[in-house]
Image (cartoon, rainbow, N blue to C red):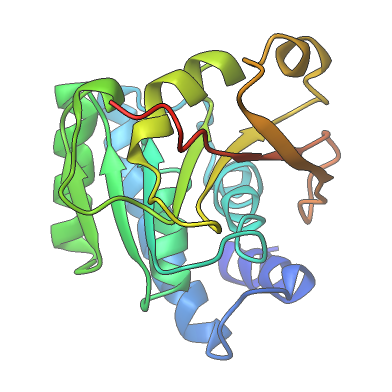
Length: 217
């Protein structure tokens, strides 16, 4: 199966939250995969080496967030190779994504990706999350392969908008029992969702957490 067919079939299986123009979305996501693959050969941005694996383990995995996120202004903490931020920005051009990445090499990749892929709805910030204080806070703050839950919420809580629907969302593999037990008491886990990624057998979970709006820096 070629990459285009693999990706389009995966998008059709995901269904929820995707725009109607899936062929156009698929084309742009493929451009991102090729761009990531090219840079990865030199800069070692991800351990996933094959484009076929990038489709499932990176792109389709990232898009499982679509039905969970509300609002239009979101942040990706520890954005790394642009996951999940870039696939989300491609799938939803009406959203604005801020990609927060402290590693200069990775931040340079993200900025170049925005130029080459013409992603005008992305801002790249080269800074640690806990040191970033934006003028406009975010509806959703996301992490994927960033840190344990406690570190994530402590680093990113101040980034959440002060309204009832703002959320912290962590992407995890196996059910994170130990991490949930160690979560600070002031943070409420709203739900834990097991998600199915087309073409991937491994477990995936989304942890949706209400921010602590009472203790802001």
